[in-house]
Image (cartoon, rainbow, N blue to C red; front, side, top):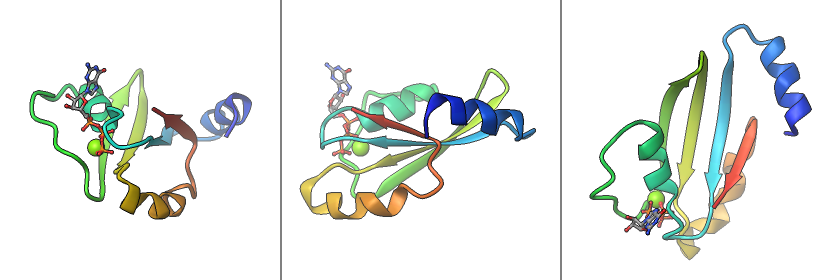
Length: 91
Ligand SMILES: Nc1nc2c(ncn2[C@@H]2O[C@H](COP(=O)(O)OP(=O)(O)OP(=O)(O)O)[C@@H](O)[C@H]2O)c(=O)[nH]1
Ligand SMILES: [Mg+2]
């Protein structure tokens, strides 16, 4: 979704809730970023075998952040997570 569409969605969405999808190859730092967004300790991050979800409140917005494992064997499943995604972040 482009920036203009995100702004339109936020205007028509009093809940101010967005779905953010984090995608990237294994070891790119996706889970570390997710934990940093949630102000969690990042000292012991292990490879993601499936996915992690965290809801983060930021500036009055609720960001539902999806972090998908990047290992080769998991990549065929990435396509299943695109639906309803508002913001795609690739690392
Ligand atoms: N130097 C450095 N290391 C990082 C950074 N982000 C993550 N790491 C390290 O890189 C390694 C992999 O980080 P993860 O967050 O597990 O990477 P991931 O993208 O979630 O990997 P998968 O779950 O396998 O897809 C960890 O040892 C992190 O501590 C960064 O910005 N700089
Ligand atoms: Mg991970």
